[in-house]
Amino acid sequence: MSFNIDGNESVDTPLGLLPKRWEIRTFEDVCEKPEYGYTETASLEQIGPKFLRITDIQDGRVNWATVPFCKCPEELKPRYLLKPGDLLVARIGATTGKTYYITDCPEVVYASYLIRLRPKAINGRFFYYFCNSELYWRQIDAGKGEKLKGGVSGGSLARLLVCVPPRPEQDQIVDLLTHIDSVIELHSDRLTLLNELRLATLGCVFGTPRQAESDEGEDEKEVANA
Image 1 (tube, rainbow, N blue to C red):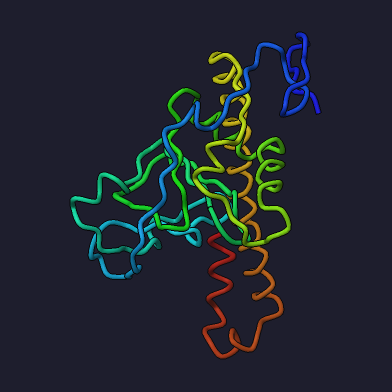
Image 2 (tube, rainbow, N blue to C red):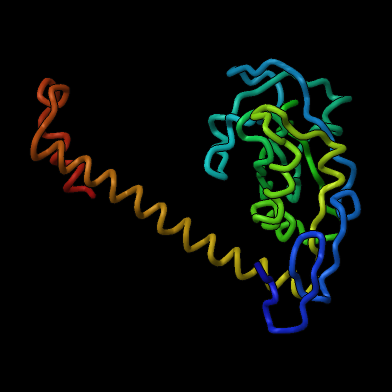
């Protein structure tokens, strides 16, 4: 697979055929030291900051309203609090290697099954998009081997390779992919609304045992409102 975007000369690299001007670096070169998350018990009571776990990250999204809380002493918060630009990596289980990029967040710490990467010498979003690419996943899968729960460590992540274009090119790639993401999100939201309308229409036309016992006019109102 070639990433020679504008037709300039490509060369063979440890990651495959890439533009000659792109550098190959390790994660350790472009990020601060990987940090493991906080170990604590989640609580629905607001006893401290939000407590982000692997299970709270679904389809690349987090519903902050449903993320639980945890106790966290003030002296430990600076170490574990998340901020925009942080990248979280699932380190164990079937989701090993999956990433989540923090764009905005409440006061929140991250759980111990996550590893935080903090980009420092690369566009953070470009780094996130790389971590959604085949070049990244080939390395993750090679590290896991045949063990489904083999997981990854901070050390193994630090040794992974990343391709690094000149910064203006990173920014251009991010702009393009961010625009595509926004279009996908728009259509996903519309699809959700259409599915809800479809279900309401089916209920209005055919009914269900539960609907028959309740107010039969509710589905008609929902379709009318939609």
